[in-house]
Structure formats: structure tokens, C-alpha cells
Length: 194
Image (cartoon, rainbow, N blue to C red; front, side, top):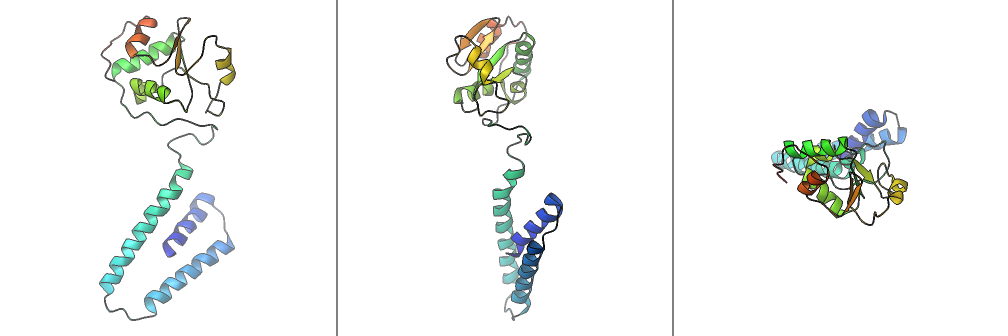
């Protein structure tokens, strides 16, 4: 209880930056009960008491941080931009993937997708983490981050996700990087690693 109260006092002082008489009183009571428990009786084995105390502190801190830490940092998402996002891209990009993504962006290509779509995530995985940030991505889900659902509804022939608009042609479904390179007249390196 003392460890959790300490965490709450940390939040009060450094995150919320305010005072709360009830919170401070609760923390003082928790500290008093801890002191009375430790000092109020004779312990036969102080080493075992210290060892058990360290274990309880570590378990409490790990549990508390595991539950409350994502509240302030939800998977690196910008907190001021509302909307849902899909899982993060976990593969690495090679130089060819980055060059293709930049070429697609420069030529006005667009990838239409939805945050909840597993095939869209697979498509981004092909590009890798660094190149996926360069992809000209249009979010079509109404509840997605930076949603452009009205634009998606206006695209003729858009029947599924992901879909690519490259040089005026609509490619429906997930595409290989080679297919996207051919469709966009990409003439850079093609040693794609994903």
C-alpha cells in the first residue's frame, strides 16, 4: 500500500502538479501503518523481512507501471490526434523500400486502407518501419486517425483494402513491392528485403 501511495504522490507532484488534501492524508496514513508494522514488533529474522519487502515493492511497481504506463504513452501515438491506429510496423526497411516509398509519394500514388485491416498492416510490413512512414497513406475508416473517409467514398472502384492508386490506375488488394515498382515506373534499386 505504501508503494502504490508513493506512486500516486509522484503523479500528484510531477504529472498533475497540484495538491490534494485527501490524497496526501491517505499517503500519510499508509506511511504510518507501514512504520507501525515494521517498528511496532520484534522481528526474528530481519533479513527475511527485508527480502520479502523488496519482492513486494518490485511486484507492486511492475504491476502498477504495467497497468498505468500506457495511459500516458499509448504505443507512441500522438495523444493530441484523435482516432484509432493499427498495430505498429515491426519490420526494418532497406534502402530499396525507402526509395520506392519516396518514389510513390513523389509521383502522387496513394494507398487506401483502414486501421483495422490486417492486409493493410501486411502491406506496410512489406515496406518496413522507416519506409511505411513515407507511404502516401489515406485512412478510410471513419474512426481512424486522420480519417479521409469522404475521399475514399469518392474513389470509383474502391471495393477493398488495401488499394493503391498509381498513375491513374486502381490496384485493389495487397501488392508486392515489385508490382508497385512496375506500376509507378520506378527505376531505382529493387533488392527488396521484405
